[in-house]
Length: 334
Image: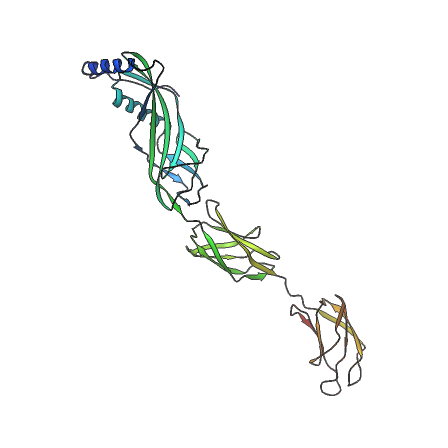
């Protein structure tokens, strides 16, 4: 960056006595000692993106000004030097250095990066909830010509984005209702909690939900994706801050009804007691069998395609009677 130089042409004679006194004072210091100044606070016109983050900190924020931050820091440093020393000639040495960024007076954990002439990127520190100022602190080195010779002036410049950022409490998840749904997905769920904000996304396990809508700061609706097993539900806000409720939603397998292909034998005594072999599909361990509504004892599922049972006594005289197999998941066939 080209050095900026200010020449004060007016008031030279009036300032001469002051410059002489300044020269004598400077001569009393070590020759290599620099002058340290702190400039008056200057308000920025600009914005922070995002403007909201949690009290835990850790949110990446871009602070953008409508005018060059480096040029502004230079001008403020030069003016501070003029105000303090009444100098005739001075220039900025090198480029202003971004020394720190503060949110509500709390320094950031860093790193703070000068993204461009107009933008600084930083990571928020932890802070109590509320609206805070954002300060950009620059160090500027000014070379000043005084009667005693050239002096180095180190100027601290504070550029403030007033009320530029809001800290809010982290969001939480309390319940997910209903807490189960089919593996195919498509279940409309309501999530309750706190501090929900517009723009949130939801995941069931590792899969994103659809139709996510923040209804109120404590209520959110979404539609479950396809999945299996019991999974956590995660809510992320626009700053990628997340809240997790573990084991929040259980996927239930689709009920596949069994089928009966044949029964051997197909008849028996009215008193029952004879063994029967059923073939078909979808038989599950723990299946129950009824004949004409009467429970059959001794049901043994030997495979998904075969089971055996003992015929009960005829419930109302000679048949025929329907045989019904009911699986533990409530799937049934006759």
